[in-house]
Length: 107
Image (cartoon, rainbow, N blue to C red; front, side, top):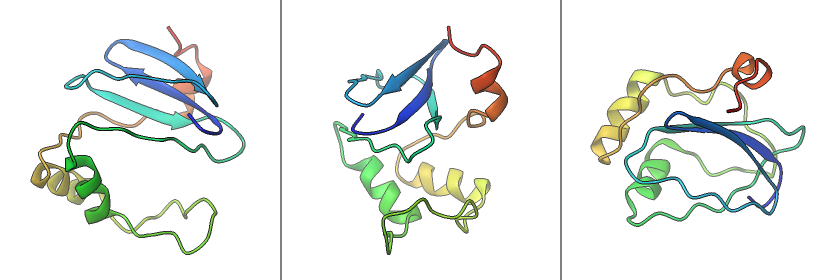
């Protein structure tokens, strides 16, 4: 983690990562995260292959300026799942909700 704070669910564990933390998520284990800091979170992601990068390039748009994007990023969940599958990735389950963060979700 370069900046900010995120809550991460990996398998059946949920934990918080802060700036300067190093987190390793095992390959093949379902995971998700949600930014919980007031400021944007910045992370350095390292993957064994370039499939995730190719997926991000397929669904993302380079930022014009350094600010959080709008919540409507123009792609629906079904399209995201289809494009992920094209890059040998699986999207399962829902993202962490605000209630997950504030209702004792950390174990």
